[in-house]
Every structure is written in structure tokens, then in C-alpha cells.
Image (cartoon, rainbow, N blue to C red; front, top):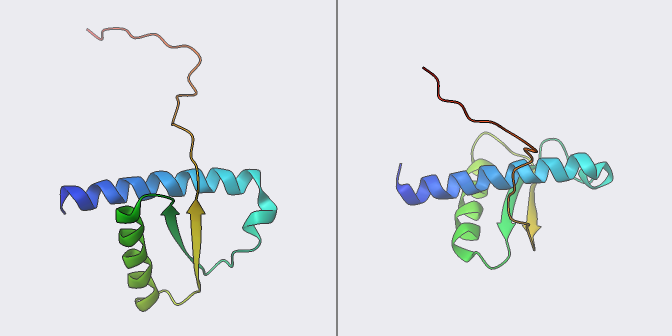
Length: 93
């Protein structure tokens, strides 16, 4: 696996995780997407990622999955921040 491909996969996983949190907070939105759908992430302004994501969706569409393709177009995303309120670091032995 190339470094570029790993970077795209990591970004896709991060976006899917964020999308899942969004869906949990907006269940009505989720009802519009069938269970067998192929969900393809898109990020406004990131054409390299968008092309990669499109190829991945096409691969799944032509492979074993045969559900409809839905595009999730992310217009803005907030920077990731830690939810940790307090912590302590200790040296172990």
C-alpha cells in the first residue's frame, strides 16, 4: 500500500466516523439512506480525495455490493479536538 493510499484511507475512515456521529444526532437524515447503500464521502475543495473516494465507490458498486451509491458531501468540518477534560501521565517503572 502506498503512503498516499494509506493517507486517503485514513481520511476516509475519519470522515465515516464523523458521519456516523452526525447520523446518530440526526436520525431523520439517516432514514433517507437505504441499508444496502454504498456511501461515498466527498469533501468540498479536496478534489484529490474526492476522485479517490469516487474510485472506491465504483469498485464496491461493481464488486459484491450492488446497492445504490449515495454521496455524502461535507462542506465544512471543525478541527478535531480532544474530549479529555483532565489527565495525568506517569512513568511506568
